[in-house]
Structure formats: C-alpha cells, structure tokens
Amino acid sequence: MDMNGGQALVKALECEGVEVVFGLPGGAILPVYDPIIESPIRHILVRHEQGAGHMAEGYAHATGRPGVVMITSGPGATNVVTALCDAYMDSIPVVCITGQVAYAAIGTDAFQECDTTGIT
Image 1 (cartoon, rainbow, N blue to C red):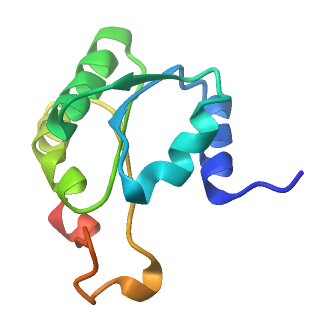
Image 2: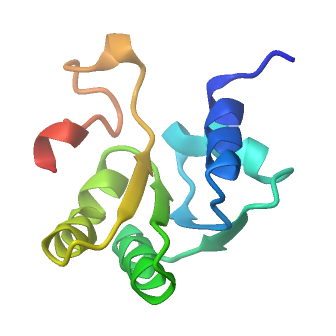
C-alpha cells in the first residue's frame, strides 16, 4: 500500500500506541491532519498552540505516557516553545510535531517560515 508522509506519520503514532494528540491545524500541517480523520487517535482541538503544549505535558504527567502536540509552522511553532521548555525542565516526555514550509523555501522568508529547530 502506498502512503504519503502524513499517512506514514499517523500510522507510526498508532503503532507506538498514541491515543490522543493535542493541536491546532494550519496550512503546513494539514497533510498530517487528513489521515487523523480515519485514525483511532483522538484529536483535542485547542484555541492556542501554547495550550496544546501544556495539555500534552499535563497528559504525560498524569498518564506516564508521552504527550503529543501537533501544530503548524512559524507562529504555531514559536507559540509552543514555552510549554516544550517547561516539559524539558521537568523531564516530562512530550513529542512535538510541527509543519514546515517546503524545503526549497527555507531561508526565503516564505509564509510562516521559521527556523523551528533553531528556536528549541
């Protein structure tokens, strides 16, 4: 069966036993959101990316399982940094999945482009 990247990512999350993700969809992450519709993974829609990060952190703290946050690129990624730093400082396992502009657009000041790895 052929899979695109979004489908492969969701399948990998399923194989790892992920039951819930916290997030806010946006243009660069939509290809990952499409396969979630058919997945048993429950998505919790939030109003702000920082809230999604803290929810994933709280979920991990309460359940002992890694929390997963899924947000879009650029401002979505920058908004979740505080929650990621908090989880890191408290040794709470959080997986953060962000969208990103096309590889060829990196460094061109494209819409919602951000050096996501550089800020974390």
